[in-house]
Image (cartoon, rainbow, N blue to C red; front, top):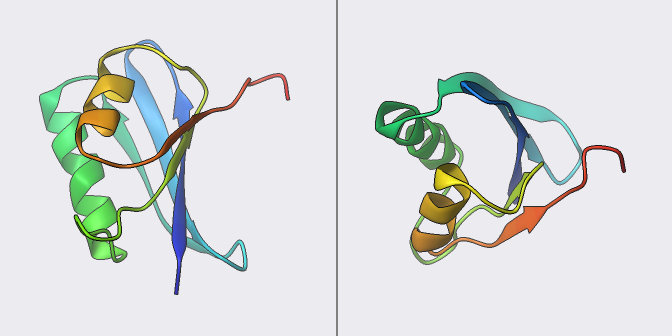
Length: 85
């Protein structure tokens, strides 16, 4: 099973969803915009098969910011998606 993560970015929190290749919701979570929130995100991803060898790709509504930098530093593919798309 291959999973993908989508993040609805906001100023002080982010809504996260993990779906499988059939678009079935595997998990969702609201995280804070800080180190604890990033740790919560990593835990959710790990619960759904994320690993250093096969990181779950992430789509997010912005191409910049601390969360995006942390995701890229963790070795995963990050896709910035215009929220108007």
